[in-house]
Amino acid sequence: MSLKNNLSEKQQQEFLDSLKKRFENNTHRHPGLAWSDIQKKLEAHPEKLWSLHEMERTGGEPDVVDYDEWEDVYAFYDCAAESPKGRRSVCYDREALEARKKHKPENNALDMAAEMGIKLLTEEQYRALQKLEHVDKKTSSWIETPGEIRKLGGALFGDCRYEQVFIYHNGADSYYGARGFRGSLSI
Image (cartoon, rainbow, N blue to C red; front, side):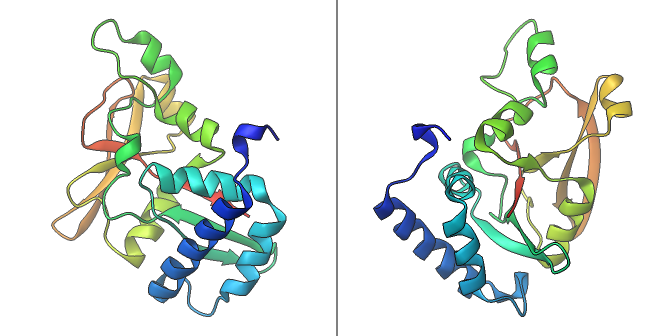
C-alpha cells in the first residue's frame, strides 16, 4: 500500500467517529448490525478505510447497507441523497473518454472508482439502495454496464423520479453536470 493511501491515526479516528455517527443515525439501512463488529474490520484493513474516506471526500456519504453472514462481508454504498458532487460530469469509461473529439470531461467513472478502490454499483445494488431510501431525485448515477451493451457504445445509469426507480441508457461518452456515479466497497 502506498503512503498516499494511508490516513494518519488522527484522521482514522475522526473518520471512524463520523462513520459511526452516520451508522447510528441511519439504522434502517442495517437493522441488527453492530458498529463494533464493523469497526474491528475497518481497523484491520486500513486500505479499505482509505477507500471509504475517498468516498466521503467526494461527497458519497458511505454507510453499511448489507451484510453477508456466510462470507462475513459488510457492504458500504454511497448513500448521499444525490449523486456524489465530487464525481459528476464524467463519462462512463476510458474508452468513451478517449473517443470524445470535443468537450472532453476531466475523467471517467470507471477509472475514478478504480483509483478510489471501489466499484460502481450494479443495477441490483442500485435498486436495493433505492428500496432503503430514494436517492438521485435530481441527479443520476452511472451503474455497472453489461459488456454486451458497452460493446455497442452504450452505458447504463439510474435515477428516481415520481417515486419510481428508472434505469436508462446513454452513449458511454456522454456526461452531464448532474450525473456522477455511486460506488460500493466490501469488507
